[in-house]
Each structure stands twice: as structure tokens, then as C-alpha cells.
Image (cartoon, rainbow, N blue to C red; front, side, top):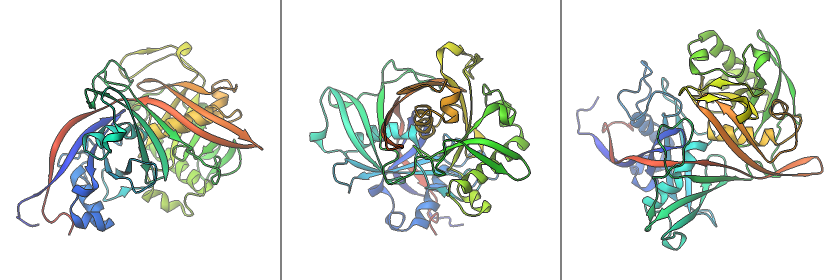
Length: 393
């Protein structure tokens, strides 16, 4: 280990939706990290504080959860009719691994604000007072995201009265749209079926809806796997056997979705697919103590991220939920009553969330125009992050 002084890199620590992460302008990264993927991974691992055998990320910016072990890279876009390119890295906590296979929907809500504040958006795209429409190219999944960022007196408005379940304090509302999360060249349902029988050796066979909108996601019925659908983190995350079962089901689902060919590959693809379970609307008490009445929601959904039950709901999984709920015949739609709809409000461990979807059906194929939801975002810290000089060696 070198005793040379640490190097410092301009960085911004932001909350986006119910996640937090360290944001970088690509041009601010050391040249080696810009040009070499291995060096970039080493740098971001050290920034976040991974790998950490204690699973605490004490020596880095991470918060030791899937919602806080995240990094974001933003640059002026090379894509026509887009303002910025956004790349997301989900950093493993206890292993030296950065997963670039998917997007973070929650942090997507902060990208527009970061881009404006960092000078990455052309001035003629901004407004003095009102809503700036920021066109984001999501590099990981090669999709367009539109962020509607409020501005006041020519600066990003961060404070407001919009309340988001899973976030303690109100802030300004940022509406985001995920355009064509599945386009005409892709399969919305990779197996071709709305519901499959997913056989998991040693565990059982389960009805499953497997969908690729937003992020590849496997939906199960809560009762089929021994749950009610109203569980909170403590009901699952302290049960090692349950977590092991979920991971095994997720791995076999990944094979059936065509994402991997060997069960071992799932170990290096923790970010995707997600696994979730659904139930009909039920009363429950959210983790904050807020009472959620069944009349407030159309179904309950619980989802796991990076091997643990999420404290709220991943933004990308919310896209999958919104689309699946609006396609009659899926497990998600059935749990919600199986009717025609263009939006759905679901319950999650921290409260509720509404997601809208614009879907056209053409010749038995579904054309997903966009999925929309509201997030909020704010800067928590900006300055420099310091890492040891030999980090990228």
C-alpha cells in the first residue's frame, strides 16, 4: 500500500427518489478511469467503500444498502436530440464488483438536476422560471429518459412540498418519463408468455410473470412462496434461508428470461433481473408507522434488490410494475383486479406509489410509449471525494 497523498476528484453526493449516490462528470474522472473499464471499476469501488467484508462501507461514500451503494457518471450527450449521457453503476458491498447491466430509476430523477448544476446542459435548453425539459440518454440500457426539472430564478428548484414515501422530508417534484422502455425490436415478455411455470430445482414450481420493461423483473404471487405481500424489510432480510431461496429463484428466472445461460452467472449479475412478489390490496402499516388502507392502493408489491428486500421500491422495478399492471393477464394485473387501466397505485414497504403507462396493442404485440412517475432530488454534498493514490493500480 502506497503512503502517497490521496488524489481528489470533483464529486456530488445526491439523493434521487429513495436512493443516494455519488455523481461525477465523466470529464472530471482521472484520464485512466475514463479510458479503462477496469480502472474505472476500481476507482468507483474505492469511492463507495467496497469490497467491505464487514458489509458497512465505513471507509467510503456508500451506505451499506443497495439503495446507497451507487455511482452515476454524466457527460454531454453524443446522441442526437439528447442533452446528456447517463451511466449507472450498482456497486456490490462485500465483493469487488460493479454491475453495469441496468439502470437506477430513482437516481434517474436526479440526473437532470445534476446536469444543469454541472453546466452540462446548453443554456438555450433552460428556463428562468418554470420547467426545464432535460433529455437523458441512459447508456446502460440504451433508452431515453425525460426529466422535468423545476427552475426558479435560473437555478434548479430543489425545495418544495412534494412528499415521496420512503423519503423523510418534502422537496420539489421532478416528473420523469421513461420513453419506449421496450421498443418494437425487443420482447416485452422474453418467454412469449404472460404467465410461465418457473421450475426451480429443489424448491418448487411457481407461476411467474417475467417482463423486461424498465428492468428485467420476475413477479411471483406472494401466497405461492409463503408470504402475505405486506411484509417489511425485517420480515425477510434477517431470514438467511429465505434470501437464499429468493436468489435461487431469481437465478433460474434469469435463465428462463435468456439473460444468462449458466446458473453461476447470476452471481456476477446481481442487479438484474429483479425478483418481486405481488398480492391483492391489503391493509398494513408501513415502515414509518403510516397506516396504508387497502382502499388507497390497487395491489401490494414487494421487491428485492441486490439480495435484500428493498425499503421502498426501485424506480426501474416501478416501471415494470406499471407496465405489467396495464397488461391484462399478468400476475401483476390479476392482483390489481385484471382490468383495463393506464396507471396503477401500489403499496410498498414505505408507503404507496402511482405509476402511469401509455401502451398501444398492435397485432397482439404491446407498444410501450412511455412510463411516468414523480420523484424528487437534492444535492446533499458537493466538493471532492478523496481516494488513495494507488487505487487504480
